[in-house]
Amino acid sequence: MKHQGIILVVVIVATSILFTGCNPHEIPIMETATGQPSFEPSPNLTLHTAADSTAALIPKLTPVPTPVSAVPERGEIFVCVSDYIPSIVVELKYATTGNITSEVIYNFTDAYLRYGTVKKLEAVQNELIKLGYCLKIWDAFRPVSAQFDLWKIMPSSAYVANPNTGYSSHSRGNTVDVTLVTIDGAEIAMPTGFDDFSTKADRDYSDVSKAVAENAMLLEVVMEHNGFNSYYGEWWHFSDNNSYSVDTEFSPK
Image (tube, rainbow, N blue to C red):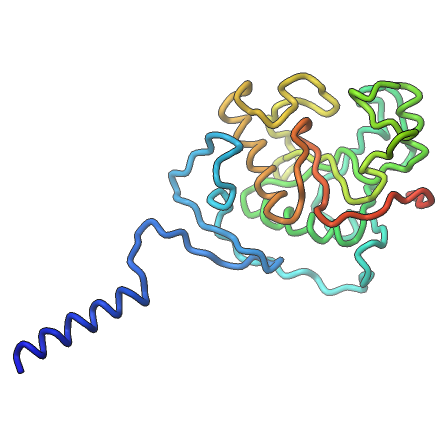
């Protein structure tokens, strides 16, 4: 009977370990407001390269409830981004001379995107605010007419998508050029400024400082985590992984 008692204790302990787990390095998983998994990294985590596991870079966050309002049910409808993400900073570079052409390309200052894309961007903003950051939009929907104006001024496929052979993804309404700022709008050090086509503008962060690389990678990781694809040649450029047709008629107010 004594031996049987010992065996019973061993079985109970082994079963407890099997079902509860005891790996101190296991990463806990939770769900974000978008229903996607989020991960809690080690407090000593250091970003090294863009090839590092992105999952481990997402901090544990408390889901932020989305305000209930009258919103379009169809994801393809164009909406003003600020109407759904009031905390986002918008500084459309092509509404100013602060772009590669040094000319104003379009005359509206509000960013417009597809509703489905805006909801994903909202999830990004919610995560970044928890970390003390905020998104700034440099470019969002770009009318086809603006793309022709860009090409007329800068007819080089190295810098501008040729609208005669294929439209810019910005004309689909699911693509944004974004950077990071602080909650109060102060600029964060990033690899380059907007419309910089030097080698530092790509996603090989080995040619920038560690701090700058970490900032760019944080933006990249949170954007990809919430359903955006990154473009290797421009650290600021992201497209919703849900695609839409080019819209040749929509014109922002």
